[in-house]
Image 1 (cartoon, rainbow, N blue to C red):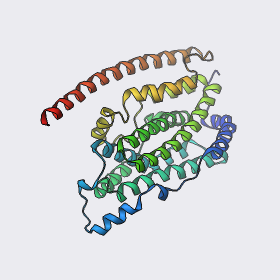
Image 2: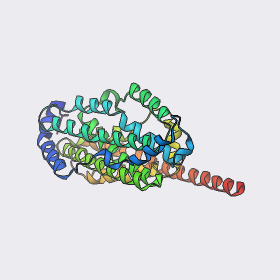
Image 3: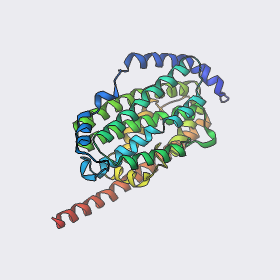
Image 4: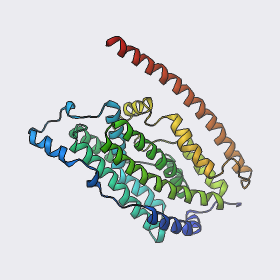
Length: 317
């Protein structure tokens, strides 16, 4: 392809792929109800005890699980911003519009069930949680691609973001050490995986019809990737805790998110790039080498930090 396709041309070219993947998603998606994953009896027990103030002793979650649950929930809470971002870059007609509506409805369940679980089990301070929600939603979300945002940047970003969120939810479920939370987050992670497949297939089809243009968008997103929770209250602290304790770290980002998707698209073995695409691919390969070094450096620092924590704990006991 000698020229970049316009947004409208991309939407028209990819319309059959979108329709096929909407139908695929609807056939595979399982309906579920948030109330089925919440231990309502615990809420009644706390209510029977009287009082309205939250006490940290009421929570069964440790600091890592709390940080991960809050971060994941506030990420889901910002759905209106993500909906706007997707809706502005997709058509409202046909399969595109059907997908935007369906995706938004499914994502909304995630925030509902996670908040109900945390409030009913008294997992976190509900007042602080609500204050953080207000701040995060007021700040909203803007694409890491900045002024370059468009269909290709949007589908590139959500492909990686949905997979990253799946990894984070799944590992958070394990960290909670509560079978109820684990089952709930497994259910959410399964949704995120289906969402990822939709976006990955759209982006893969775009790579076939406009390889240079799509690879540039993918490379922009990978090199500027941020989890959607960036900017929320305590994001840095919570992110450090999550990385330190294996909820979501740079190694997982590289090996469980970025590389599997790039392999699916056959990025490093394709022969349909022009010289421009080859330059972009080289830029991407160089960045991934840097990311690998950063992941190794972080792991070494984390191991030393965990060893110090263990030594202090042993000394204190």
